[in-house]
Image: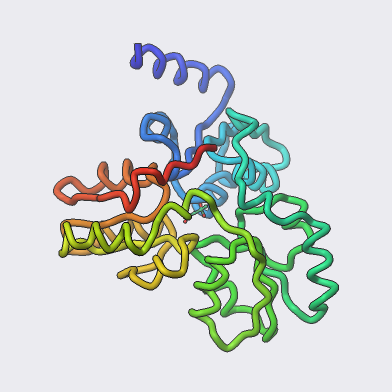
Length: 261
Ligand code: CIZ
């Protein structure tokens, strides 16, 4: 049954001149049928070099929207139109406009987990993989960062010479990781390296061995000698980590870290 479904998907891809992109947070079986798997920055870059006329984007709304912004001439399909990102909906363009009026000299840096309307009135857009570099490249001493307060806090700690106005948004899925939960796992697996996504609470960031985006977690774990890793991000990422690293063990920081969207 599964094999015939996969064959049918492959056939449809040819017929419709389509390619499938899947985010690192997708379930394993979706990652396995995708032509490319990656984080939002990698997939945005890949989307610009695609020869096919249709992109099927297995991710949440803002990711497919980004692919469409970068490829206005292509058809971008989001298989589930209700796959939104709760964090992206935590700030509206009107709210950001009001923030800009309050801090007229600040440069607005918006996390890619945001709507196109919010991006349109921002100065720069960043991802969790390049947020620190983006802020370091900005001359202005004053930054409005939105919508994620935890990524904002991580960036502010990494580039402390600037003054920040950080929006109060967050990712509900990353809230399931707690200091107690990770400490208990660390007791069971004392040699494990703790990799924490910057969307996690500050108390969890504080006990990380390394704070990094999904793509950075993948390369860090691949290149590190350790055999065990505790992974604090959406559970879909473990599929790729397990596949790429036979002989290493990846322990979810919480079994509940499943994005409902
Ligand atoms: O940039 C992305 O794709 C997101 C949402 C997280 C990450 O760290 O990859």
